[in-house]
Image (tube, rainbow, N blue to C red; front, side, top):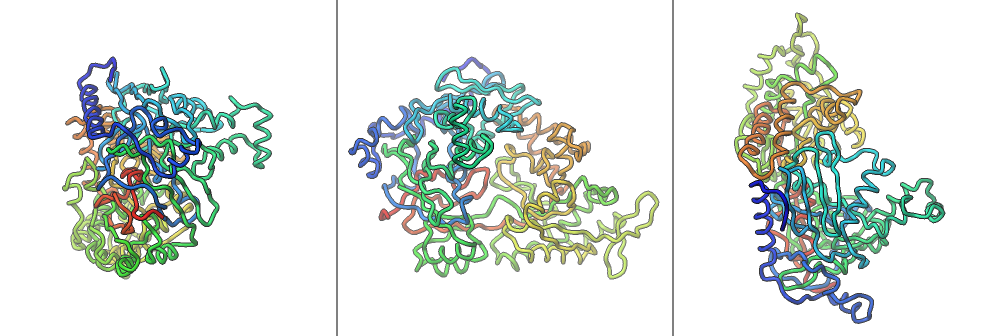
Length: 638
């Protein structure tokens, strides 16, 4: 690897990358092998030999257990086309990727990279000879097509991505040659490799195919004809339809599987990419599995029944953990095992720090009130009653799976202590009235005559918890004199209410993994920073959003800490210190009232292999993408 930078952090980064590459190539074979279904096509003259389909430097994937065998159809269940996920969880292949620990960044499409100008410039070198699934060369031009003709085209991308914007300036991308990509930022961005691993799964498009549907390249008459054929009125609609990997069988891909029977269909099928660019240490081109079949079903109950009947090979999506006993009972006749893993996310209650109600806002910004909420909850009893013990208490600051975790972040205010909760509420001035229910504290000489009666809005499904949980939480709150009414709206309405600042208590999940690359859950950066959505609207729009509220001094301090932290290159003491400052303040201030981290289930057929002993279920890792689905294999073919 070469580069003009000389700083120590860059050199350390290069050494780390070299170490990963050497480890990946250890024991790699000198000759390559392919699946029988592809060998037949080579013999028939439909495909070039495997050596010509692979890049000169394929990525060598070390299997979780052992070298696999070719063949088989991976059976999955889906609730419609959205569960195909070939653009995300079932197709995770960015420039650089998360490793199997879920904490480190490893090579992907890029074999190596340099960090220059103290973190302002990143230079990535693509593997030599990459190809799309139709055999066309995959080069830096495909990344530049996405950058210049999609991201920088306001008709296709009205808003430039925030993760590619630093100091108010969007990234500048260039391609000095077919294998080299340069990203140049106005200010240092040390967190960029992690951002790429999280956000960069689709920053390229097949120019040779999609340019046919872009007015910069396409003949106007041809474009009009295509739009008319598809009954579309705008070229942008046509472009995005053609760019949908989950639904367009014609679209070339660089990922392990390509859709061949798209939704809507009772059985959606994806087949292996014959030009996939990874091999195992024995030189076998990946993936091992021939195809994935997604059976479309009506609801989660059908998924449960089919999974218990052994009609699933590997699946966690839509698997209801509340049916654990049933799954175990049927595992032997069904020919599968049930994996249990704690989620990194915490079921949590968001307390709005910028309520539109001035009197209520003063109360919600009082840390004593938030601490009292946390102390009022008997988590151990709740877990016993509702989770059958398949959960652990959690404050919702961060999970042990995150590199910045420290045990003390979960230590305070996690115990059940209604006596102290009552004392804190008394100290605030929330006197009890009729029936023992409390009133709002006095303000500006006004007596405490306003009853405290609040709506607790519950997001309906994604948290994987029923209304029973939040009704139990409301009962705990009532025991210390706080009156809450549970309300469950449709998911889209529920989110809209909190994003517009119209919900002051909102039940959802607080993520606990890789917060550094997705900081909106700990810092008010967007309207989806649910603990302070109006602060987030202000910050995300540079003060232009009419609903936005300028963050208070305590939040601005954390924003400043993160701004410095995100610019530091490498794992330095200063970076860890800044991260711990932010998380420690979250622990001390109790901005979110965490309840518990629950166990999630994965159904694994006895014939399905190379699954790790434990799985981290997280969208930032594109689970199961981070494991490497290309190295899964099956016994017995079909």
